View (cartoon, rainbow, N blue to C red):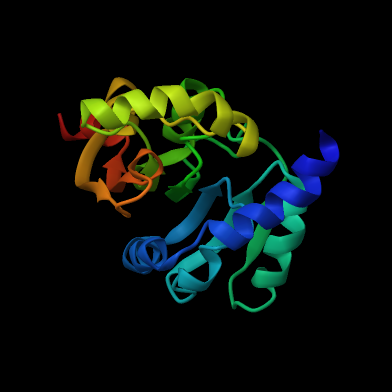
Length: 213
């Protein structure tokens, strides 16, 4: 459904995807980005106002949805950031190996179909001393909530263009060789809990661990 994907879905996410609890965490973690930055799944640009333009040399905004890019461009004009849009999915990062200081992913790895490929790509383009800043939705630790997540996942994958409710994002990072340096987690809302369990923090790439050894 191209019309839904390109016009309705971007506006739906723009209206519903940045409530105060999420904004508060964006304000905490996005200013930590520095140097050459890649944001995977930049969406409508909700993170753009929170970057510190004095610390970010360039921001590559990877986003395959042209409707999202149109919305993000409006926000980009209101910042001092040097932004280059890349209209490709997160599994295809068109950047050189070791060229990025910070990767930012907010509510992207919980939607991207090829998450293993995406994590491999992030590892490839990050510098050895780089970092991954993440804020992702996923699998609750509570069995009852997990049951609801499994029931609702097929509906949300259609409504929100591939949203997975049952991914354990930190475990997937570890399987990809990343080390979790900082991690916070919890429900951002009491209802619906099936849609509000999140992790946020910083992970470092395998290359840095190898150098440390």
